[in-house]
Amino acid sequence: MITRHTGDFKWEDVSVLAYQETGTNFKSITRQILFNGLGDLPCQLRYFEVQPDGYSSLEYHEHVHLVLILRGKGEVFLGDSIHAINQNDVITVPPNTWHQFKASRGDHLGFLCLVNVERDKSKLPTDEDLQELRKNPEVAAFIRS
Amino acid sequence: MITRHTGDFKWEDVSVLAYQETGTNFKSITRQILFNGLGDLPCQLRYFEVQPDGYSSLEYHEHVHLVLILRGKGEVFLGDSIHAINQNDVITVPPNTWHQFKASRGDHLGFLCLVNVERDKSKLPTDEDLQELRKNPEVAAFIRS
Image (cartoon, rainbow over the protein chains, first blue to last red):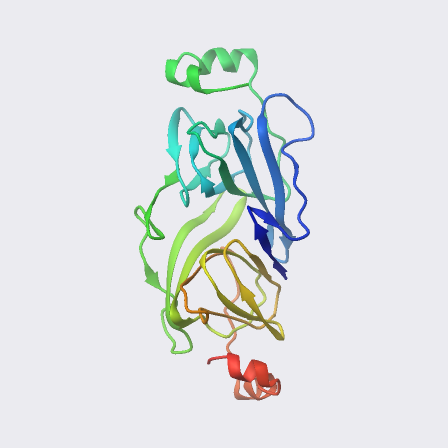
């Protein structure tokens, strides 16, 4: 019933996994599963860690993300704008909202991310989506795909 | 979509609330609601902070708690035994399991606690429950009610 932190954002009997099984649309990011649903909590709690040059996928989906920054700092593209994010900030990613997390401020970015155990597959940008997103020069400079 | 941490485990536009509305079976503990359900996440995320002399209610209930220690250290009575808990430890409280959190190690104890938005009411110990629990001298010395 207790999953002990063993230091440096690793946990007892928790494997450090690839961020996703396939794809080249992310960089230098790992995943650990801290909770995988029990009783009336049909939720999976993951800890993601992004190295100083890394980023998560640029994506959207129907399911909601509840994120809390546990370590370091970075930036998030969320909806249509970019925000600096710091330790203990809470970020909600609503349904069908573009998002990408980056550790672009010279530090690791480690964050908790809660999702439903049953969720839809992420959608990656089409060429048309990218063309649309890049109309905003600030967004064009930020996003990676 | 971003709830900013403003320092010292307070968040922008998040009120510091009483732990519970009524009762004398807890001490020196506050509650902040960081997320209150959205889309396919029917969950409430709370941050509880226990002062160095404080403790949460000794209770059990059908609903599950998912806890992550965000600050400091303490102890938890969980099921039938007492465990030291430290920053970043993850604690699952299964259905109908006695639990009480205490900041009894000379520090604050601040923790995230995830629950379902719809959940059953906590059950407090009867005199008979306490008599049963106190058969274990270690538990008898630990619990407050």
